[in-house]
Length: 368
Ligand code: KG4
Ligand code: ZN
View: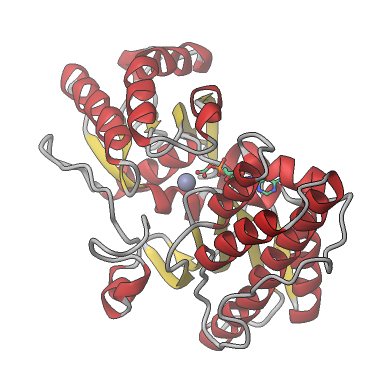
C-alpha cells in the first residue's frame, strides 16, 4: 500500500559509531511519529578484545552488516522497498569509515528507488529522539551522554538547537570504557564499572572534578581518565582497591554532570520565556547509570525541572531517530544531492562552534 503524501514513509540508516541500524518510520494523522521497525546490530563482540571502538573494525563491520540490517528493517515494518518515500542517512559527525558506508548504501537506494536522499546530522537525531517514545514539547534541555558525545543542548524547536556546552576532549562513556579497560573489567565498560562501584567507597580515592566551580557548561574527561589509570597503578590491585576506584570514578562523573548541568539549567532558564517547570531530557548510553540518573533527578527537583528519560532503545544510537529527523526534513523539502559528502565533524550549532573552536569545530575539536 502506498502511504499518503502527508504520511510519508522514511527509511533511516545509522552507522556513525559501532551500531549498524536501520528503521522505518511514518507519522500518524495526529502528526506524532510512528516507528514501524527499528533494527540495531551492535558491534560489541568485534570491539571487546580491544576495550574500545576501533574505527577500522567498525567500518568493515558496517559494510558487512548494512544490507542485511536494512532488509530486516523493511521486512519487520510490513512494508516493501517500493513504499519508501525517502531515504535518510547519518552523514556525520562520526567515524568517517562507518558514515561513508551507511551514506553510500542510502545513495544507492535513493537512486534505485528514485526517491529523495536526506543527509541527517546524527546529533539532530539525538536532539529529537525523546519525541519518538512520547510527546515531548519544545523547548527542552537535553544532556546527551554516551561513548561518542557529552553535550548539553537547548532544543527550542525543529532546527533550533543551541549547544550550551560540550566536552573539550573525551566523552563520558569513553572515560567509563577506559576505566574498565585499565582494570580489565571488559567492554563496554559502563555497566561493569557501575556493578563494581556498588561494592566500593566513593570517597576512597581522590580524583579531579575538571572545570569545577566554573559557570560554563563544558566538560573535560581526559584528566579524570588519566588520574584513574595512575590511581590503579599506585594501588595494590586487589578487588577492594578496584571497587574503590570504580566507586570514586563514578562519583566524580556524577559530580561533573550534576555541576555542569546545573550551569546549563541556569543558562536555559535565563533564555526561555516560558514559565517552569522546564523539561530536562537525558539520552545516551551513560544515562543507563543509576547513580547518574539519581543525582540528575535530585538536580531537577532542586531547579524546578521535570526529568524525561526515553527508553534506552531510543536514547542510544539507533536509526529511528535518524528517520525522525529525516521526516522533518522531508516535510520541509530539504533534500541532499547524490554527491553530498560524509562529514567526520559537523557541529549541530555552527555559530557556537565557530565562537568556541575548542569544543567541537575544526580539526582539533572533539567528534561533535
Ligand atoms: O549511546 P551508546 O550506546 O553508544 C554511543 O556511544 O554512541 O553509549 C555507549 C556508552 C559506552 O561508553 C558505555 O560504556 C556507556 O555508554 N554505558 C554506561 C552504562 N551503560 C552503558 N556508562 C555508565 N554506566 C552504565 N550503566
Ligand atoms: Zn550517538
